Length: 519
Figure 1 (cartoon, rainbow, N blue to C red):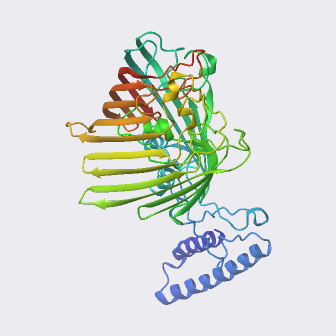
Figure 2: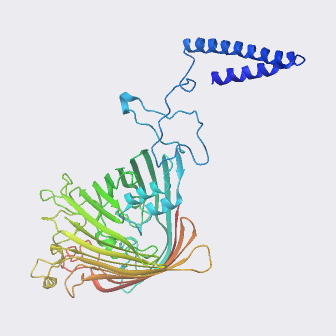
């Protein structure tokens, strides 16, 4: 800066001094200019020596200072639309605390990413692949801010009718008599609301936390207006190490979905029974590999009953004091034709939830673990999408049989627990900005022997959905269920006469409309 200022001053003085020799001949004028320039250069040299001796010259003014280190590739060094000044140094952390690591982030501190928010909070698709969703969002520039805030609200209006008093088989709300009385019910409610933050704390480190309000599917007691069912919880949270720009390997520790099965649906809102049967949420640590369409994950899962769909006994209790459960998943996606893909995958879980003895109750401890496996596939062909999945335990579920030989229900033998789903979706061009998605899906949960009241619960869903704007999905569904098989006391044990409240011939018909909005 000082050198530039002095050079500019010399030029101005030299040009202004030419007026004094304007009337001289050319020879005299040239000699006078040369003499003045030599004098100014000598003065400039002395001034620079003086400034350097006083410590006023910084690296940006020194003629031979080292260049600034370049930021890590793949990350912005300034906010969108802005440019860092050429002489602005890159911030360097103190060597005694963090070594010579440089801060490569110059983006805004807090921002929004609508598409990422919808994807990471969606309960219908990408259910147990949130970490990969984050890594891919980092790659395509959706997480350029230090902290990305996300939120979503799902509201419903529905009408439900059952052929059996107070037995409604739609599992998007818990089948409880505290909220569903008689044979007809209707609602206009908040199904769920979420708020999340994704923090890029370093080039390869991401922290995530998600808050959930879900009165319709809360395990709290009482009616939908009871305080116990109106709590906000930390639904998911983890810290992940990974960056697909530098490595195909990533790892995370926290509270997250277990990598078992696909558990997705083509329906716009209603989850398939495969999700209700085997989708897991648990504490644990996961390691993943993603490259060229191959995705492999392995997760060590905390023992005990956890939050849903994982139950590994710890010395005969449900106390989660050991990491003694695990799940492994692998899938591969490859192109087919000009505009299609096919994905196939398989999973194994060491301890599923279907290990409890009679009478069955949520989160009770088990005598031994019951492993499970899953196979699944998703195919896209232009505007069409199809999926199929099959899940089953490797051993029988002890609680699916009644051990009392004097009970008439004891004639039904224990069996493996099975769930499967098939569905398809077509994106129809209706001449609007977004296509209209038309979907149809069937799924089954089977828990009992042939003819048992708790044998199975089937679900049919026909859906329509349309995106009014990015992150705003308006949908409508017709749902039909056959069978009413609540997990708690499905084979009995809660009535003095030994009967069961499961009902094989119970049916429910539901018509629902809603909006899922994310920001």
